[in-house]
Length: 497
Image (cartoon, rainbow, N blue to C red; front, top):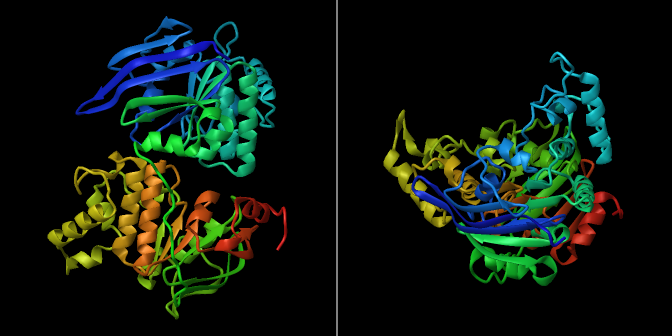
């Protein structure tokens, strides 16, 4: 595994007004899984796009098998055996699995007609090598997220990829699907294929990677063998300072009852009741499909509730739609900030006040001065790194986008907040900031319902946890009873109540 197949030396990438990479170095060995670590904005994605031929670099050198190369397109990179699987899959939904695998390279008969028999035969052979039970004639639009992920890997093999870049490959996968992906990665390693693995999930990196390279502010920091480093050292290199604890020390004492959901029923949720007290963080834990996310969206009015009742401060409220839920005292941070939390093409100012414009209007007139004052206060309070309130939300890093979502929810000033996967897709430094914000909210009297599949986060932030499975509430665990092993066992049905 000591053979170097890819080498990056002193690569610089300058965009107008911004230097994204200042001095990037990277070495990838044959048959290794090499993790790329760094906060949002560290230059990871830019470097990977350069390696994949999607972006040119300003200066520096790149070598494949010891020979210097310059890529002008992704096709150039593919010819050298380099392929990248992006977070947002690059496939045509209406076409079949086989057509997507060989898109732009369909086999032809003499005379130019597509050789359909050979196409499906070749696609089945590749899928078989990966031990995938996916029909090559299935249209991509009918695949699950995990099946789409595997199809992308199969597509990489059809071009003879020797280096596969995976960008946050487990972001939308269940625990079982992640296991299948990791088994596939191990199989690719055995064949001598190198994997460049980008993930914010440190537990995954320490489980799957052989080595890791850390970038910070566009600069190369260090490369480490996984067995010769640890979580604390990697995080310190990423953020440039010692991180003693990711989670704030909470001193919660149960306050008065502020929220009740009684006998909630709906699609995927069956007779679930929960209660929440002032200043509390209540975790609702469950695997994908447990009903936890559906429950949260029913409480917020984003999904229809067939029966049940919601009470805030003892008063029954109407949660038939999000506007009524907000008016009743419930705020919501979605698990998909780009689709449901933000309008990326609008400014930070517009996003922050989107759900609370009534506070800033007199008749039909918007009090822009008052609005801007509130937005600037939220930017300062949440430490959002922006050029100003008029910067487009889509131009921010993932962590700062998530802070804008928090700012929007804070501006509605509801006593109850539902946080659905609040740190998904953000780096460790941004996670610590978000946890600080959550703790600060509860100290000021807000109460939080936390939905998360990140078990360390669930344990680190919750004052107590309700476990759901197959749409039902299974049991409640106190802070003292929480452990990853216990949560996983109850979530998966390994042990019963």
